Each structure stands twice: as C-alpha cells, then as structure tokens.
Length: 106
Ligand code: FES
Image (cartoon, rainbow, N blue to C red; front, side, top):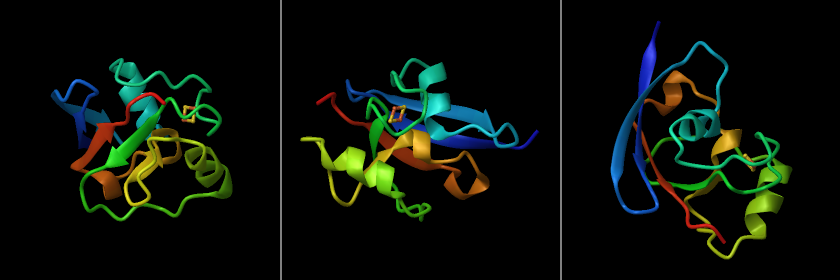
C-alpha cells in the first residue's frame, strides 16, 4: 500500500512525522485526529474549525470551497496565506511531505 509522509508541528512546537496510506479516502483531519493532534469536532463538515492548521510547505493544494472560506473568515488566528481546514484536504500523493502547523484554538 502506497504511503505518504506528513510533517506536523503541534501546538507545543513539537515536530511529528506521520505516515499514512493514500488509498483509504481519508482527509488530513482524519490522520491528525487519529494521532490526537486535532479535535475534528464536526467530523469534517467545515463547521467547527477545530482542525484549523497552517500549511508551512509550498504544496499546491486544491482551491478552497465557500464553506471552508466562510469558516476560516470567523477566526482570529487566520493567516490569509497559510490557513486551511485539514478536513478539506484529501490525502493524496500531491501532499506527500507536506508540513502543517496546528493553529491555536481561537
Ligand atoms: S473537522 Fe470541523 S471544520 Fe474540520
């Protein structure tokens, strides 16, 4: 099974290197949540922002949909250039070796 690597900087500044398979239809929040790095309270509906993270690497990600943009827009901790909801990022080969930083809870 093909795996990708996800580099994570948690809220305490600690680095984690995660491996995850790409064939299971997961999103980035699913993977972060399975390692207790985010809460993912709404289950991936773009409704809670508990999976808010900053993309620190230069990966080209899919465009944001309106519901993600609307959610991010409500956050004090938004970074216009880096903020994403992890639940809206599918696990594919395109994000292999991505680096994400968990955003502070608003
Ligand atoms: S899990 Fe709720 S917005 Fe991503």
